Length: 293
Image 1 (tube, rainbow, N blue to C red):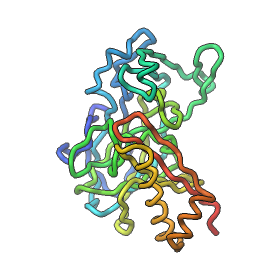
Image 2 (image 1 turned 180 degrees about the vertical axis):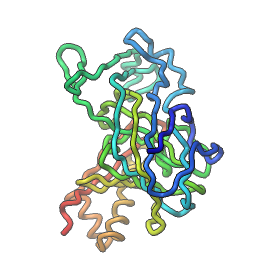
Image 3 (image 1 turned 120 degrees about the horizontal axis):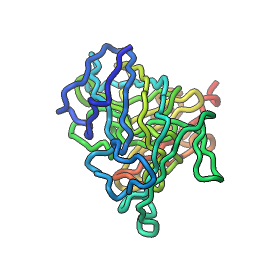
Image 4 (image 1 turned 60 degrees about the vertical axis):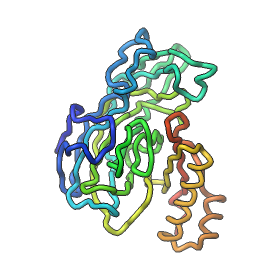
């Protein structure tokens, strides 16, 4: 099996990066990923104030997929996420939704127990729920891995986990795929600015669809289909984009009229927050697969 070292990680999604590796469609790669804090935190005593924000959220890659061309769709099937046995959550000054009232700094290191849980003090035990924060392809113009957009990026969406397929629009030859920012667990919103940030080994099969043009990321889980949108204009803008994408998907794939699709999302779908702390906020619209006959 192909392995890609965390030493290939970059801090931007960009067509200017030379490929770390070239693969054929359908091949599987094990990505070694750095923790989002780039190994800057090791104990509760390590201050969140010392974080160098120029070296966070690295994405391992990029991977050049032969035959992927602008207008195609890259399919990233997430087969397995194996997080490190420890991670850290932080409140970083100047970051987080309540930064004006709870500014930090504050650091908490977590260790995975033999039963797969993590202790948070003496009264809370957290289950291990690994997910990918940053996953994307190179856009036409470089963008930091801290942000998100039509190319994917720092989506921080808890549904991006093993057993799911991420669909990403291809903007440049080869797609130039990268992945990183794994969380041992994270809540929707990522309100303080981090989940339990950890390194990991992530196994992904990459393929190309030439018959499925999309404008923004889509996600399929065993139970749901989801559209994902990011917007610097805030939640209302992101929700509108994700909702319009879902309506279009249902029209094309399920043969519904625009009105039927819109109503179906209202009576059977969910609007969920991904994260509300990055330069562009992220939401997804989810519809259960089991309702279709």
